[in-house]
Image 1 (spheres, one colour):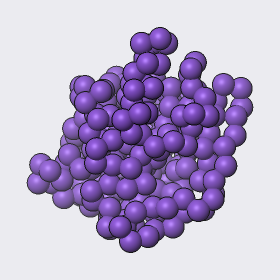
Image 2 (cartoon, rainbow, N blue to C red):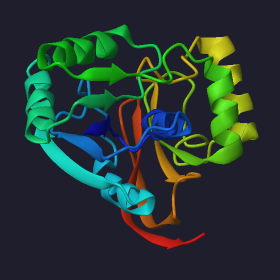
Image 3 (cartoon, rainbow, N blue to C red):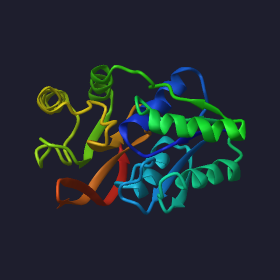
Amino acid sequence: MMAVLYSGGKDSTLAIHKMIEQGKEIDLLISMDSQNEFSYMFHKPNIKWTALQAEAMEIKHVMFATAGEKEKELEDLERALVENYVTELVTGAVASTYQRDRVNSVCERLGIAHHAPLWGIDSLAELNELAKNFDVIVTQVSAEGFDNSILGKRLDDKMIQKLVALHNKYRINLSFEGGEAESFVLDAPLFKKRIVVKKSRTEWKGNVGRYIIENAVLEPK
């Protein structure tokens, strides 16, 4: 049973595509619904809409709740893997050793193979690939230089230029591995249908801005 730890963001979605390109078959998407908005391990914004993404890809999907407590949230991940008889796990880890090492620890304990096809990928190369082939929007920002001109907007060439400028000025991580931002995929090559957001809102709490999807549907491509 090959499963993907799926957040609905750019990295875990691209990781699925990379595994498919290698001839692998994805059996299951596992999304962890954290009650902690600032979970160390799991992506929070718009996590409930991963069910729609799974439907678009026609891959089985399960959602597991977690309190999101540091370190203890790994026990919830372990339970999700055991209950679904996972033998191989795919993650969208790019450069965060904190997340990779903890997933590796869980997988080693359970005898599960961990695949991280994006590990070490050049950040700018990843962004360019996503802009060319995927429809990705930014759903959370929490770093100096980010504002409404980025929140909720599509990752395209113009956005990449803006991100590079912010990287040069503020040293943000272009892959968002430092938690500077989060993303959500509306369309991708494996999607049989595309996601259309019908209703949304933005909110700011301090320096954290969120684009919240309130209603979305699948439509023909």
